[in-house]
Image (tube, rainbow, N blue to C red; front, side, top):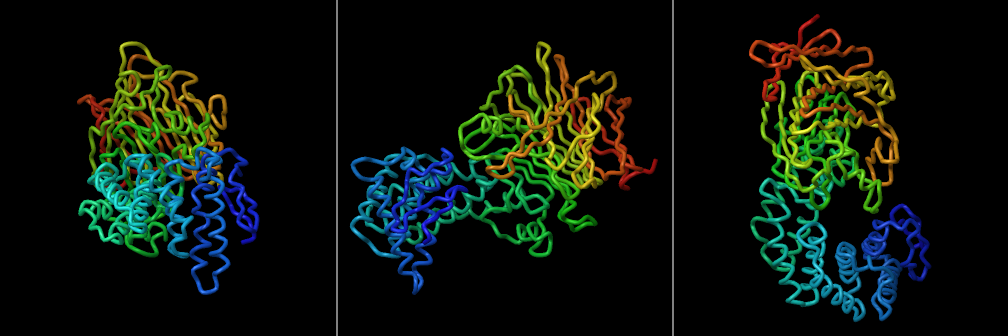
Length: 554
């Protein structure tokens, strides 16, 4: 009412009469234009205006809507092409419907809604979240204004769209964890809108909606924040408040813990944890790992197949590059590329974004979990990653393998959480210390029998810009320098065994490998006073081999 609106972090001055500067775009950012043109920001005026003393608020909302129609839907056309972008048009239609519910039908408002309905019918974004927004708006406009063709088209699109957009495990096709929450909210709204229009929703819609929260429960780390894969941010579980998410976001004080330590989804997600804070370890100290595989990248996905993230001992350890909005520039290209993820690159070979990655093996035992993925995303070159999560005390063993007919440079990338600063760096390992001095993170290439790690194989890059490397964006608009550990090998064949071990500041970490008589490798990992034994088969399978007791004193 004072004339100011926060549009994408920028305070916009609006004349008290509701005369908006629709060309306001100080950052030339597509998200800012979407926010402005959606009109969703004026809905608070409407909802507050519907209260007994809210007449002035409703009047202001009406003036803003009339001003939009006058400045963007007249003969001169819109002030910017983004006015009629799929997402903006769908969201704006719902905002105008909200206004109509408060002030009733007006000739100028109903005509604007008819124009919007025609645009939504003609220019469909397809079966993803933008299309769902359009269909909800088209459905309700058709019902409120008696536009049978618009209503029926929206019903057909929603009915066919649910099978494409949400699979039988309740996972959306957006390939981003945060968008799972957004999609859930949209489909809940679509289900409600169908019922309010006296249309019986298809049974499959209710079933898929019922399954969607479980994915988000499993994708939430012990600190109550989702793991930010794809175009996602480090935020609390979005659009879900189940007993499990309440348990995670409250630090275990409310709700109830989940049941399973491992969840695998055909859309390409593995979520693994050491527990739920119910068996001798505090919830915040449980370990959590994610691993990506699955179909080709689409929509809000990143080129992150085989990438893993790791949380443990109460903090982020190995992290995803994150998401910094939709401005088409070199930094967004970086965040979506393999270079911003924890993968093995084949240097100098073009990465195929549309290559699928298979989950080839999985074992979940009482004290460890093993996962293996494989693909040919780099020019048909074989690439395989095995990951063993050792649950007690909590560390990762990663076995990367590759093969080609000619020598290649293989580069493993490990993005440390911004909280960690590397100290000691050698040809084979990096030791990093947390900012509070309480935790160390040990990332090490462990040479197999017959191997030697060459000088210069391991280096750290932080905050580089040409090209971008060593950056993390946990929330939009935030670019934090963070250390990226790069480990390289050269040859026709790659066999790289990597340890990722969180420890206290005063614990020592070391490892050695021998070969047993059956040709399995025996990996001894020493953390402080204790040692743990891992066995690796000739074909890359990994398992824990120490006794049922946690550990053995030196």
